[in-house]
Image (cartoon, rainbow, N blue to C red; front, side, top):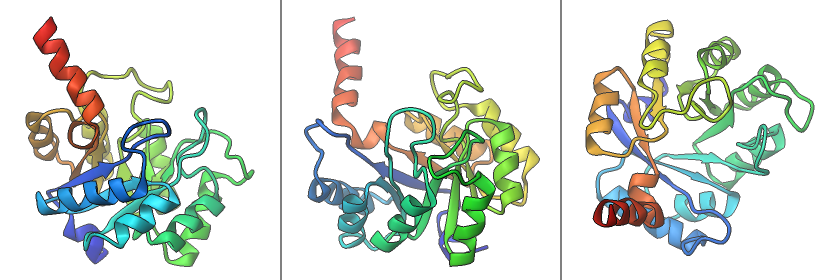
Length: 224
C-alpha cells in the first residue's frame, strides 16, 4: 500500500471546490479553505483545476487529490490523459479520473489512460458510478476505487445521502482495494456510517466547503 493512501485510512478527506460564477471561485480562496480544513483535522484535500491544485499544494502539508473538470456532460472529470498529466504537473499527489466506460474526448479507453498514468508512476483514483465501473477500474490497476459518480451516470438511482448499497458492494467485491466513499455525505452521522460500512476514507465536500448550499439547508429548515 502506498504511504499516501495508507495515511488516509479511516480518515476524513475534504473536497474544496467552487465553480465558475460562485462567490468563492478563486484559487487563493480555495487554498484558504483547504488550510482551514487541514487545521480542522482533514487527512487530505480533493480539489479541481490546475490553479487550485497549485495554490492548495503550496498552502497545505496534506496529500492533494487533483482533478480537472472540463465540460458538463459525459466524461468531464479529468477527461483525457493530457488533463491527468497536467494535474500531476500542477502538484497533485493522486489524480482522480472518470472511471466509466463512456467515450473519452481523446479517443483513449479508460484502460489505456490508466496504463499510461501508471507508466508515469501516478497514483490513480477511480471515480465510479456503478459496480461495473469499479470492476473496470480494478482490472485496469487503479490505486483507489470511489463511489464519486454514484447517481450521476444513469446507472444507479441518485440517493438522498451516500450510496451505501454501492459502497457495500464495492467493499465486498474488492477487499484488496481501498474504497473511498464520496458523494452526498451531508452529516457527521453519514461520515461515521460510511467508515463503519468499510470505506477506507470519507470524502466530504458540500457539507463543509460550500456555504451557499449549507445556507439553503438551514433556510429550508427555518422557513419550512
